[in-house]
Image (cartoon, rainbow, N blue to C red; front, side):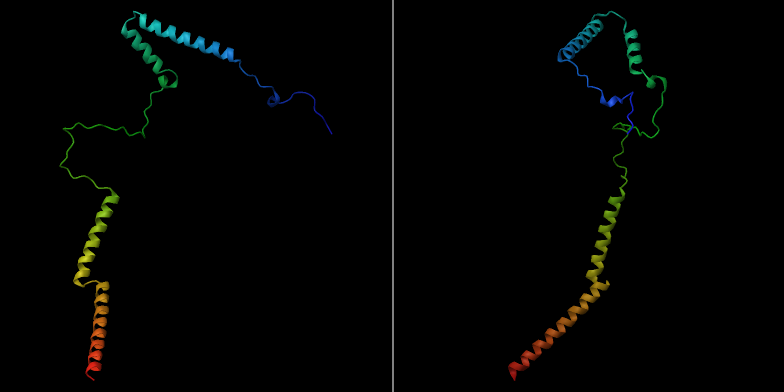
Length: 149
């Protein structure tokens, strides 16, 4: 068995926790800095041009200020004025809406042909009905013959 003496990994180190008093002190200092910055902005008598240029530099800090690229994949929503919108123009239907309308029309067409007896199913139904009518008529004749006889 070989034991290595020397450096150990960083994972075995002890954890270091902040004092609650230290955290409170840091938060108070942060609040004081924010309050002082707000008071300076309100009481300053600088011209608006200088402050607007400062705001622009703050907004464009970092990489955004260096590179001005617009996303080519982003589609901006352009709002139309009420006068430009043409209400009377026919609206393009979506694929689902077109398919739904087409389905309803074909169903109506089929039902019309079915009622006229021009479809295969209608012919089969009519033939079946004719056979049933004939069977019932024959049964009725047999009953009449038995009653008379």
